[in-house]
Length: 92
Image 1 (cartoon, rainbow, N blue to C red):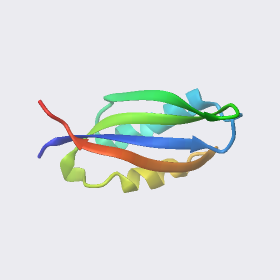
Image 2 (image 1 turned 90 degrees about the vertical axis):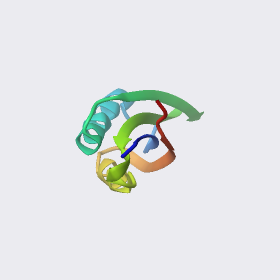
Image 3 (image 1 turned 180 degrees about the horizontal axis):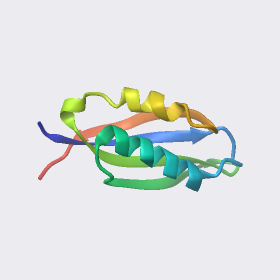
Image 4 (image 1 turned 180 degrees about the vertical axis):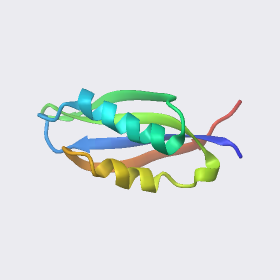
């Protein structure tokens, strides 16, 4: 099976949520789901000091949809929503 590159967008409940701590916890769940720790993250400004956390990671295509990962990340404290915003086959 091929590898896919997926990106999830995590919206915190408020600008007061510590995105660095949230990123660490989310990456732990991604590593447990995807089986590796190849990730890239960025903080995207939204409005009025609120920032979204976008994490891109590599997973095996045979795992199917990252919907189960979304639900797992939603259980973390301080999260308003989690959405998969991109899934592509890796080339190379």
